Amino acid sequence: MGDDAPLSVEDLITDTAATGRSELDLLVWDAPNIDMTLSNVIGGRPSAQSRPRFDAVAKWLLAQAGDRDVEGAVFANVPPGGAATMRGWVEAIRSFGYAVFARPKLGPLDDVDADMLAHIAERHRTRRLRRLVVASGDGRNFNEPLEELAREGVDVTVLSFVEVAGYAQESDVIRFVDLEDVPGAFTTPLPRVRLDNLPEGGAWLQPTRPMRALLSANENS
Image 1 (cartoon, rainbow, N blue to C red):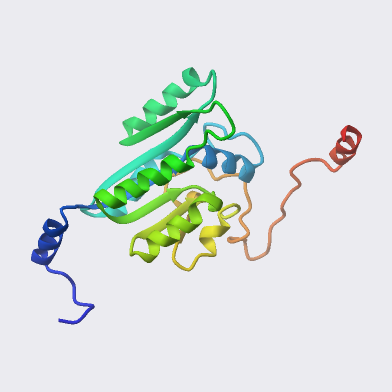
Image 2 (image 1 turned 180 degrees about the vertical axis):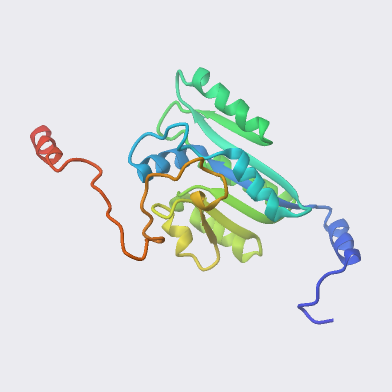
């Protein structure tokens, strides 16, 4: 039988039984990074209308998973005094089938990147990780481990924005999907001009602040 011949059902059952690990599609979401990069992309604090819909992202993930197991995990920081305001958001995400890992943000080093990588490594060790989707534009922490997984045969996708996730767009082994390209992820188009998707006649990119603000900046420096 050639190398490109499809596996039979019996082959798949035998392979799964031999390894003792079922196939898994895993999504990990870097909430602090996505929130920060979204603010940069639209030039201001995101509103309820400009925040991504986790139910739409879940449906997109499920549509590509077929019969494989699917898990989604959202990693978040909770700043001092933020528990009350974040509770509703956390409960809404959990109602869409996501697990949430919440870490208190007590200092500048209290990020969730290491927790995300540990979770990915644990799932890769205990399951047959078929597909991994990482929602983060943080190439400094994720580029090397994600490329390593991709070279091991895991289908790795980075879900972010073209303006900030250059590490994934330039990689030869990582797929990249702009978050706004996920069907239904946003209820209205984001106020952005994508350089990768310009209209044929070109487009104006308006300034993000008045030119006279430079004078104020000089006076305060």
